[in-house]
Length: 382
Image (cartoon, rainbow, N blue to C red; front, side):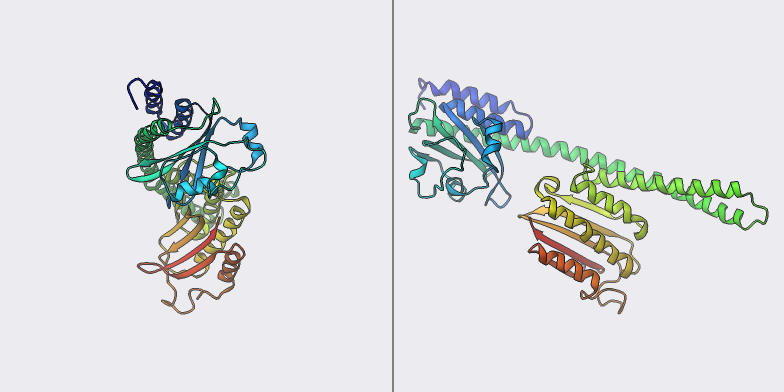
């Protein structure tokens, strides 16, 4: 790009705009808007790839009003021409999109598009996503200088994305450490003190109940106090779960999973460790989310009924690689360690889990956990 090229000032403005973004979402929005302005494109979009680099998991667009975009239907996941750029992440410039062998056409209600310009956004050596532009405002096709300008912007955008991701991860790390510290203090100090107080009250209730002239009002007051402490402990446990895994929406799958664990914790006799990974609230369909809760209850019921000497239970609910995984690991009597103490995989409980997995096109894995104990892993595609 020559010094006298009119695109140069716009490229500098675009670089400045992109660099000013603080959050990752803000940076992505700025990249799309700045790219459209840079080459006078009517429409622009940025598709973010999944960890495997095979499909789009996020799609930021500009130029199509929100109401029109909603009427078109679901956002692209990476087929047709967009899929070609995923498989071959190199700049692509076309006078007519429909002429390309990978083109699959536009969905009903989509505005007509002919000229096209695409370029990959690379972050630390990996393709983060692709930048797509269509339809110059003056009706002419994109030229080589447009391509060079967009490639230059994409290079700068890769750096801006890296900085934004680093900033978000740093913030998340600080928040995670603080949540872990608070959760640890609640568990090691507050809950233990409440347990001690509850045990003292329970002992006093037993002594009072053994007295021939113990006032009924005193016994009732002790019973109420014990129940109140139990309730407070349950509330703190739920808070600890939330602190470990960040804020949860009670109506979302995260919140519902936390509620199930809080419900079953008294039966387990210990507080399970909960791990929630991936876009659980946004990526899991409602019908699959409804299946997760009975799967989790059945798996934990198996621990209560059959696992002896359990001192730790870890529950993991994760979304990755296009699938949902529910895993329950305990350190009790693993399969075969103590005959008759643990379901061998053919019992009714695990048969139900296996049937639910089969209905969803998934699978159930049952076996020994590393270091002893048992692991139940239920997995189904999204």
